Length: 116
Image (cartoon, rainbow, N blue to C red; front, side, top):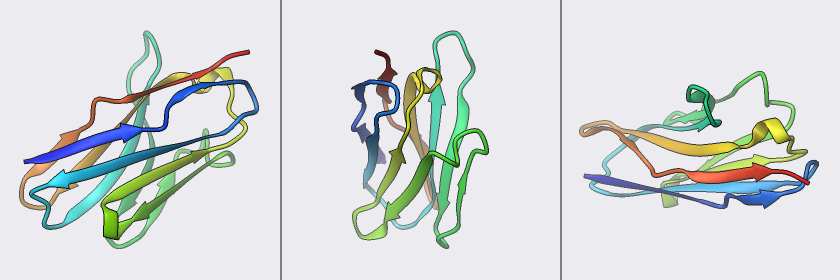
């Protein structure tokens, strides 16, 4: 199986920055995609950003002027650089990976709280 671990969350003031990391390990042959989602209290989980195996990146329109996604293929690690954070960015951020042979796996999430 594949293990997915997110890190880098925390409490930050509005206007601050955080860098989230997501590392996949285990029986990995090829990761077709690595994806960030987030879920705020009382809301549905929403897509934030994706990097696919060919290198293409997509970031949600709602955050693309502030968030940047990148991937280190050698480390099976996905990053989310979040700048100019706003209270509405408060959520649990989850990482989803799709391993070509084994399917999809989720991490446990990392909490991001933006508050003064």
